[in-house]
Image 1 (spheres, one colour):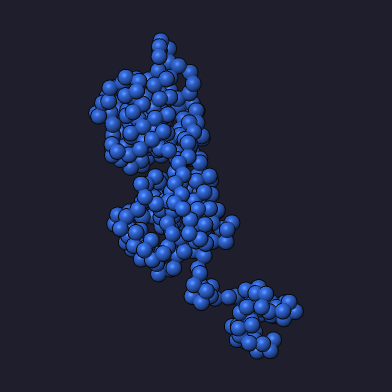
Image 2 (cartoon, rainbow, N blue to C red; image 1 turned 120 degrees about the vertical axis):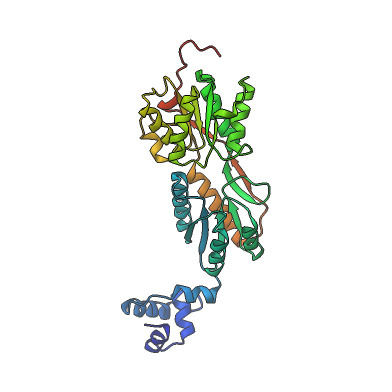
Amino acid sequence: MRQKEIAELVGVSVATVSLALRDSDKVNKKTKEKIKRIAELLNYKPNEIARSLVCKKTNIIGIIIPNFSITYYTEFAYALQNNLRKKGFFSLIMSGNKENIKEIIEMFLRWRVEGIITNKIGFEILRAVKTGIPVVLYEKVEEGDYVSVNKFEGGYKATEHLIKIGYRKIGFLCSPYFEEERTRGYIEALSDYGISIDKKIIFSGLGYFEEGYKGAKELLKRGVEGIFCLNDVSAIGAIRALKEENVRIPEDIGIVGFDNIEESKYIYPSLTTVNQPKEKIAEKIVEILLKKLNERTERSQILIDPELIIRESCGYKKRKGVKI
C-alpha cells in the first residue's frame, strides 16, 4: 500500500496524504482523521528512508565506542541509546579503532547521521565535522565539545585512598601510556605522599580481564601491597588471579578499580572503584548534541567530579600498625 492509493480512496492529492500522515496543520482536521483512519485500516507503513531523503532528516545519531568487550562502554552505549530514544532519535552504534574508523565514518555519512558521539578527535572525525555534522565527545580534549569524568582526579583519589589505608607499594595495572589522565593522577598522588615511582610495577594495557589477571600475578611476585586498576574489568581479572594464589583481599593486597560497572558490586570481595556516572554523562551529551543540531552554540566542555565508591576490596579500615 502506497500514499498514492490512499489518496485515490480519500479523493485528495498525494501531497495532502503526506502532510496528514505527518500531522501537518495545513490539512483540516476532518480530512486528516479520515486519511489516518484509512491508512491504519490498510496497515500502511511509511517508508522512513524515502521520507528522510525528502526531509533531509534521519533522526539517526552515530555512536563510536572503543570496544564492546569493555563492560563500561557497553553500559554507556545503552545509556546514550536510552537518552536519544527519549528525544525521538535512533542510534547507530559501532566499535571503532585506528583500523576501521575511516570505514565507520564513511558509513555514518552514507546513512546521513545527524550527529556523532565518540571518544577521540582524529582526521576522519574532522572530515565529518566539515560536512556540518556536530560531534560531542565523552573524553576530555583540548578542542571540541565534551562531557567526561575528571579521570586525573579519579586516579588521584583512588591512589590516595590506598595510601591512607596504609598501602605503600602500589602497582598500576593497564596504564595505556604515562600521559593518560588516570596514570598521571596515580603518579601525582604517590609523589604528594612521598612515595617513589617504581616503573617496574606499572604495567601497560588496555584494561581487559586477561591483562588484569596476568598483571596481578606479576605484581604479586614484585611484592606490591596495593593495586590501582585502569578499569573494573582489569580489577576483576586481578581479583581472580590473587584468589588463585590464596592472597587475602584486602588484608594482604588492596584493590581499587575505575568505572563502577554493574559487576563491581557483585564480585567477592566487592570492588572499591571510581564511579563514572553513565546516565549523567549520557544525558548531558545528548542535551549538548541536540542543541548543536538546532542552533549555533558556544563550546561545551564539562568535567564531572569523580566519586570514590568504597567497598570490600579496599575499605575504610586502616591496616594494622600503620601511621600516616
